[in-house]
Length: 100
Image 1: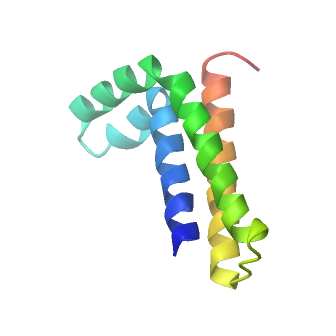
Image 2: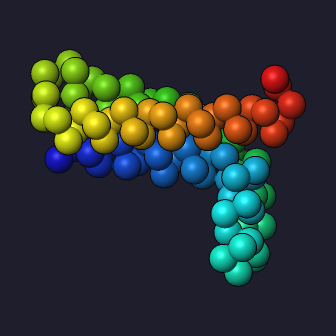
Image 3: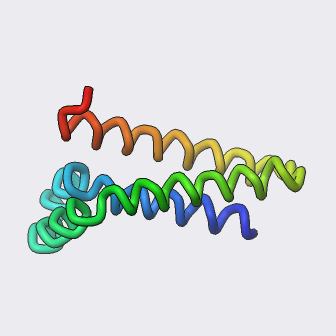
């Protein structure tokens, strides 16, 4: 259970980190433009901190799954799905900021 919670925290912190670029694309079509603007301002201000937190959560998740040898199939699948989502959000944010 702890492994799935850290994977969820990883995806949430990655979404907050990429909120400057990805948030408005998702939230504005839903009619949440005020929330999208607030999220964009917050995420730009704390983007480096949120990137570090995301990587820490991802590291803890990998430790809980592979370091403790928790080989439940659903936990491993959840971990790898969250890893792919985090890598996608990282690459989108870095592309939007012009680092690539």
